[in-house]
Length: 304
Image (tube, rainbow, N blue to C red; front, top):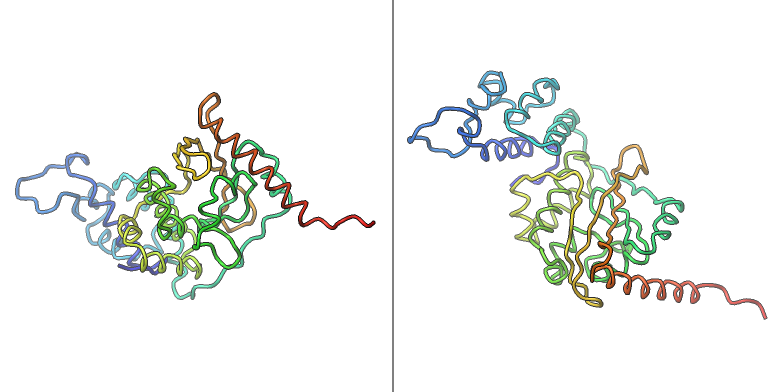
């Protein structure tokens, strides 16, 4: 399996995986009992996209850098790509024009104080800032309390910064914390796949994918699926060690902190009038108390 971001193998595997999931019947094409593959053949995709078989074959082998947007659109329609997958295909085309550039270690974008103030003002919602590698770059007290198993995990880096992907795939407790751990694995791997398309020369991202591929069979399986997710919203169930079962709605919002790096503001809240709201309130009170105690312990004592 090819883990090199932006490689021709990445393009080949993505297009091949999308082609394999579409049946001739779904595409409105004739079929026969002697057919050896369930998905579309290359020549069938070429017909649907309005290009020659030779041309599409070359494209699927990774020669995508000089392809026009109109042709990429036609291929995306032929393969029935959703919006995230289409964006990913265009990102791969853009990154292929940078072949020859060596991976570099991007400097992490610092979260400005105004964003931390915003997070801290949300006292009844868990809120944190996540970058494209799924590092949690900033969080409010309730987020630290809600995701305490992740903040306290041995998978945090030397800066004491949690990484959602490392926790999900490498911490044995993640399967208990996330009630639907399988869904968490699918979404997390798909978020990283999207980041590979956006930032194919990010050395830290390359190292993270390699680490997870080496240590986690579940990640290897999900990575091979080539699923793509640009953002993640919905409902998540957590099994919290302090307050028990929680069913929370979460929303991801684009947060512009730099011209290049992707950051999301992710907010978790509970439906009003539910048991989850009561439990989240208890957790919020506990988090606020601990936060005040920590502030007092670090504040300079008044002069006598």
